[in-house]
Amino acid sequence: MPVSFKEKLDSGKFVITSEIAPPKGTNLEQMHHHIEMLKDKVDALNVTDHQSSVMRFPSIGGCMAIREHDGEAILQMTCRDRNRMSLQAELMLAYTRGIKNVLCLTGDAIPVGDHKEAKGVFDLDSVQLLRTIRTMESGYDLGGNQLDGVVEFCSGAIVTPEANPLEPQLMKFEKKVESGAVFFQTQAVYDLDNFTRFMKYARRFPVKILAGIVLLSSARMAKYMTENVPGIFVPQNLIDELSSAPKGEALAKGIEIAGRMIATLKKESICDGVHIMAIGKEEVVPDILAAAGM
Amino acid sequence: MKSITRQKPFEEIQEQLEPFDRIFIAGCGTCATLTETGGVDQVKEMSDRLNELGKRISGTTVIPTACDEMTSEVMKEHNRAIGDANCILVMSCALGVHRISLYIDKPVIPALDTLFIGIEDTPGNFREVCAQCGQCILGQTAGICPITTCHKGLVNGPCGGTNNGKCEIDREKDCAWTLIYNRLKEQNRLYLMKKYNPPHNFQVTPRPGVLKIS
Image (tube, rainbow over the protein chains, first blue to last red):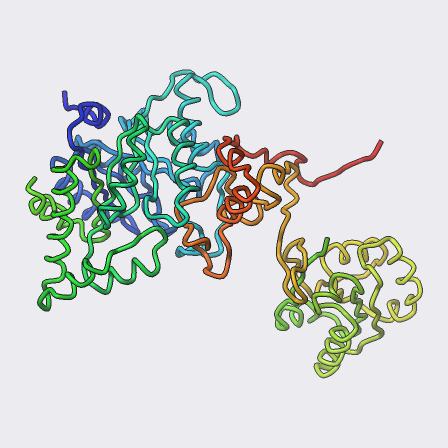
């Protein structure tokens, strides 16, 4: 019997997750390839849920595919596109298909995506979604009605250790912990001193923290992210390191940086694991792991 | 309270008026005058533009407060010009359009889009502050409404899209939860932000809202 993600989290081992993005369309070939390539190299695979509000094949479809390959899936669930009835229904579907891990997210805003005139739902928020799972686990739906057969999930959430101001994020983090999150995958972190400070705080709570590792593929991308993506700060020395790479070698440098960070996080026991986001470059996730000595 | 409006694209107004050649135009002396969308000047400008298109304007008026029931009296005063028209073009918010529709048996055409109910911060700067959700939580959010001011209407704190006090959808827009945090901190009431808020009741008064004072 393969060990579940929850058991791995509880075992205290350094946990590794990564993620795949479903296609825009019905050609699932590449998604299946990524699942096949990564499922045995990581402890669980997230499937993004219309990431950046861009309409795609559904997260639950990707998770079902992971199960077909006997992999461990983390269902990313945002509150942007479904009301509380639809979210509960999908949780039941997930449970019956062997998907036992859920990452509860608010979801990006509609205007940043590719269906700019759509209605953003946000009937629940991420904290309320976590509580919804606990309610359903206790045998009831949000309407107070009894369920014939319950769900059981390993629930997770996200936190942004580089947010400014940080305190409101930490308050929400604590609400998420109180609402049943047992693991957190963080927004991308690059400044390990800052992250270590965050971990000193987070260690007070009985949850597992997986540091977000977003692959930097060029100095330009690093600069863009630090200037435009909320909650991401890439220190200048990393941008300089990427710039110093010979032409055509920036991606290799990015892989080296990601690998180095993972190795440090693990060696110094800074956090409980990492969540690797390669964003369109899933092919190199094994290389990142190799660079980390894993 | 002010009903904030914006004039529809002229092509859309033209399309709505396509079947009509004699038009009566009604503006509003309250909110639409303030937003410069349905005051005396805008009514005159609209009248001139439609004239140029070959439409005949049978009359114009700026009703003091178009949503008020006194509007029926104003309509009576213009009985003749309205009688001569085959539609009324209304340059007020949708409340005025509704009110006028109650008194006139002719097609009533809106020239404006009603955007939100807001307040005027400084002259010419309007801001939505209340979504009329029927479940006011301003008491615990330092007077800043997260249902309205937060793009996602979140009630349990900021999302991950908050960026140096601004919102992910627009760098010009403040993050509601940063504003709430700052003000609660000033007031020494940050404990309120730690309180869990259950899911919002979206059916406080199921639409359409009706209230009868007994």
